[in-house]
Length: 281
Ligand code: HPA
Image 1 (tube, rainbow, N blue to C red):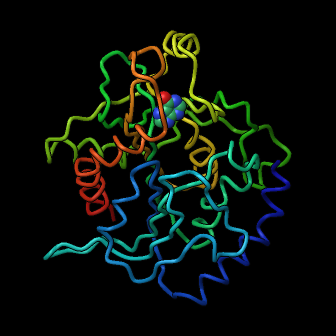
Image 2: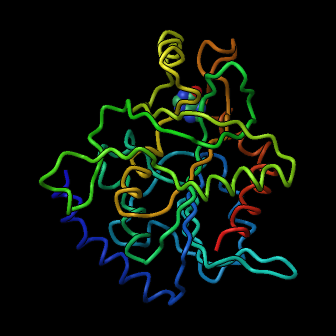
């Protein structure tokens, strides 16, 4: 696993060379937008927009709600503009391509571009009984139940994967809490569990996850966070609770509902992310 992530560096270099021909913009903060959350990209003052299908070796998503665009630019207010950004509109999931190297390609790519900070977002099913569809959750910890060996950096090749006591940057988490309170957006907090998918869980699986302390479940994010952490990137994660998980509510789950909730609460989500991005430096 580590060796192949290492070997894929050649591919990443080709992808970076391609980007360098398109733009000399130097982003310092990356933002990954999950299912139904891509609209935030419209707020960016774009210097350059690239379709992921144009970039050599870049993984292309087949899932609706994942536009597959990379936006290089700034967030701008009348008086202020943010640090230079790279916004990923959409991501690929392990269940789509069966290759963890492809899933984490955007992270290696961001790291090679010199990006040191990362905001990861996703849509997730709510398990905690205090959660409602449309809530936002600051990810406090992660659980990998996807049955995937997670990638590490080449330097770790002779060691077992290192587990960190904290995958998230304390200061960035603090900023998320501060921004939510400033703009009066209620924010849940909890543990996000990644399963392999692609099918949603059974009610029995959700009961099991609830008993072991999971607050929200999805099919992404954990591999990206894992690698970003081992590459030394400062990371924070936010989930949109797009639905209550199977059996928690009697409503039948569908991907259409997941993206629809994303679109409905896009205002609140975007306000929080905008505030956060503007507060980071
Ligand atoms: N389960 C798994 N993944 C998800 C869910 C869910 O209920 N909602 C959004 N992504």
